[in-house]
Amino acid sequence: MIGYVESINISEKKGTKKYEIPAARFRANHGIVGDSHAGDWHRQVSFLGLESVKKMEEKGATGLCHGSFAENITTSGLNLASYKIGTKFKIGETIQELTQIGKKCHSGCEISKQVGDCIMPREGIFTKVLQGGIVKKGDTIEVVE
Image 1 (tube, rainbow, N blue to C red):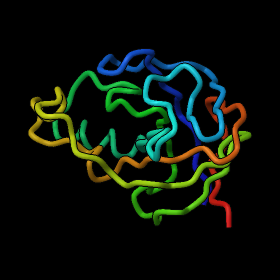
Image 2: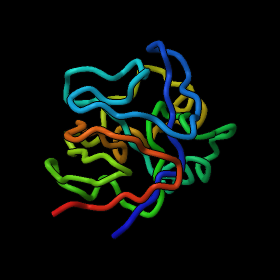
Image 3: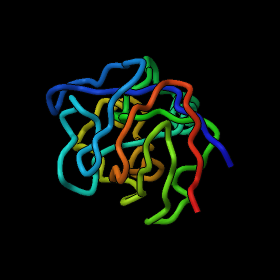
Image 4: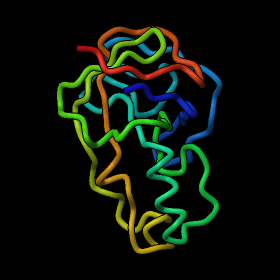
């Protein structure tokens, strides 16, 4: 299956809303250059599918945009949570490895307050950057065997 990069979202400080950028440089063993969540750890880049965002809109969430769930990459065309830890993805010039599925939602996140649920703990994923390079909006996402 092939997916697509719908948006790339970053924030310079933790705890602030991420904003969309057209392209980003990814550094091996670090993440997105300039993003506050990058570093030498297992959750360097976060992903959420556009399909998941639409589920939240169907539950009544309003005002959602790319990065609303603090995801670095908003995708389309893939069921992200269906992949196993260790799966490798080729995204733009990068190779990234799936390291975690979901994470505990921040206590009282705005989306959860609005509709009583948040999709990120179940359907968001995290990767570690194995090979750095540029990723642009519209790039393909392919599983690497």
